[in-house]
Length: 260
View 1: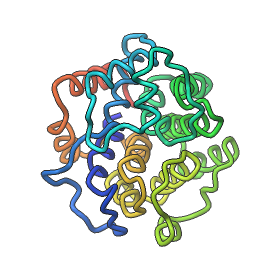
View 2 (view 1 turned 135 degrees about the vertical axis):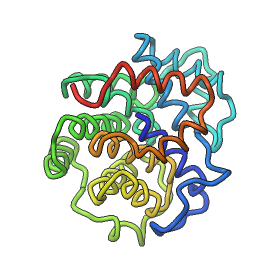
View 3 (view 1 turned 90 degrees about the horizontal axis):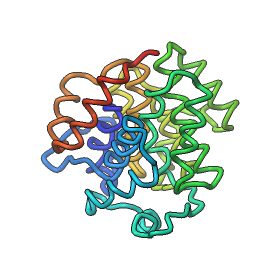
View 4 (view 1 turned 45 degrees about the vertical axis):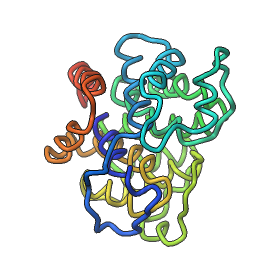
């Protein structure tokens, strides 16, 4: 899942300063993890310790109450509530935090079910669940030897997303959008249209929009398909995490390898 976190950190400074080009610095002094990384690690923590997804997400919000970029308004209200009922969201938050599921489980049926479980504690709208499942499935397929054509065909058939596009055709008119249905397909296209991990991240940032979430989703898929995150990017990413987040990332990486 380090690829998802790397994507989040790289995309963090471009969310409200879209660049619409692939020619940009990957990291700067302002690059930092956002709520996307925090909640991704929360899901990994729950998987590692057989924890409750609701309780773990809420605990991480308490631990990291003011991340760069902040949490979404309805998510913040949910996390502060004792009721913890889902709020029928179709937002892309369900997809940006799901990458650990695609790495941790070794059959597609389980990946789809657990992705649904992680989504519906908040995002119980069908589009919110679909976005999480599509992201986790793409990661699982990528790490288990499926080619891009096979991944594309499965996602299009199973989830109905239009992946018959390119980054260059999406970029001119794409704008900020927090929905799963207009974030997940674009993030997957950024991966499909790439040549390696870094190129996938550059594709996603160049689209503009909700860049940290786009790159978080793309980064998880790209890591699964291309292999380990390049050493220089991994080093910069790890250096920007605190001790607790790094500890969970390292433990997850040790317990769950790329291949089943």
